[in-house]
Length: 284
Length: 352
Image 1: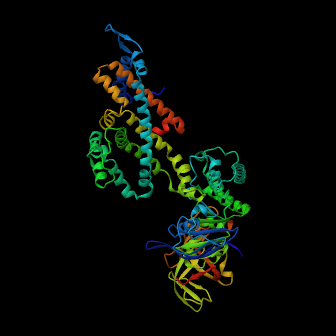
Image 2 (image 1 turned 45 degrees about the horizontal axis):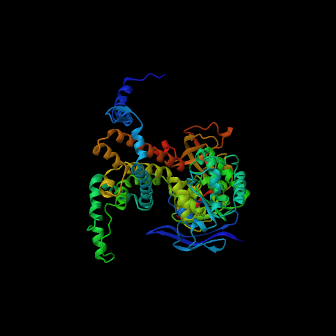
Image 3 (image 1 turned 90 degrees about the vertical axis):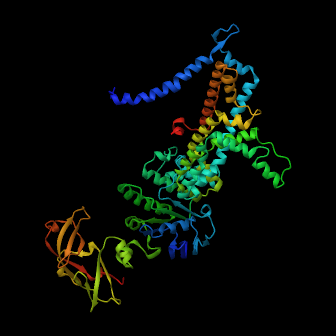
């Protein structure tokens, strides 16, 4: 085997510190906690009870299913909303404008999720901008209840996550040579065929990698569901939060955390299989 | 005579810039027609107008007698082989070739038959399932050509498809393309800046300069009798001289040569002489041959293309002379004096 120099080991230290202290050890601690259970005699034992709680109580796994379905839905919406924008910025508008516009798009990230969520509250509440406008132009008489619903939660999740979709998609579209589109058109393809047979297959790695980021952000988000969703919109991260900080049951909280990790990983795996992508290819 | 493509006074403007200026030409069915020109001469714009990616500002463009005005690329009976080939990287060879046929909604069986037949024709049997990214340059070339030809277009347009290949492969593909065109009989319109590609493959070549055609002719005529000074300078190698005077059938060049060239009915300004037109073997014995005294400055050895770089005596102007590689001229050295002859028919004179 090749002999490694001292520098090699020196450079390895930060990586190892990061991986061990920030990822491996905390997770091992959480795994340990998730299998600990306090009996009626205040005795800590190893048990599967924390995980079983999840299946016994309907509210938990219903929230779980809802969280998963909404996250998939928001990811799909993010694709639908951002694809035309990404296409316009890379293929239609000139380079000098497109970089400026991309910068504008990224502004919400600089402000932070909490502030943008409050911004949406101003827009969506009963006497907010949208309702006032609709009443003034006479379309509705009574304000529509938008805030603290699944609708407002979806908007919030979409708004904070879709930018992470647009960047990988733009870089995929950027590498798509215009002559491929012209060649397809020359060979007799309609606009729709060019879109479905050339552009989408070509950009699939970008779409999948953006989709994974959006999905992970959404399924693990707390701020938007909690503030914009209100009481009616249960999100699984809220259940975990409640376990840790409301009922101080860290063991159940840890178990729920791992269930979420397992769920999101499983969905990503299925999505990769369905789209025929490899994790290494998408991740790069 | 039926023409597959007729172009009448076609002009293309981009804003104030005129890329193609009132070009007219006809292409015979089944021919190999090349458009030769330097970069920015408008040849690609012309090709894009034929294929339908650019519209015609003025003039008319007919394919098999039908006007192509307002007809989009996907409905024109022409197909194009792009400069970078534009193969679909996410599809294998077979799917690339089948793409156009599938768009025509042909039965699956017919699609398969025609793809197989076309792959046989271009020598890619056994590569059906290969990804196009796994192929070599020449194989990718053939996939691109097969993908277009399988649609049996009236015209196949080729936009410098050999540009990206290395020299050896390019020489090989030149011959292959010419043979393929003969076999299939489809009209090829080939765009290139490489004169050798145009001369070797074509039945007719149009030389384009600043949006206009300078000359349309057979390769041989183009080389032997260039119509304009641009063609004389662009096609093949030439020594260029400025003419300072013409009187009594004798030219005077600015480096002091006096050359007999009777019968010009205009005042010539430019003179072109091909390197291989010079006669080295006792020129003084031949009739109608003007003599030039030169001194050898350099022998540029390049096998069969070996040239002498000589200066015309009493001036510093250099010119190139082809040197046959035979024993007779083996004893030439740098600095030797050399008398060369040039037949008056090989003096090509132009007004500007």
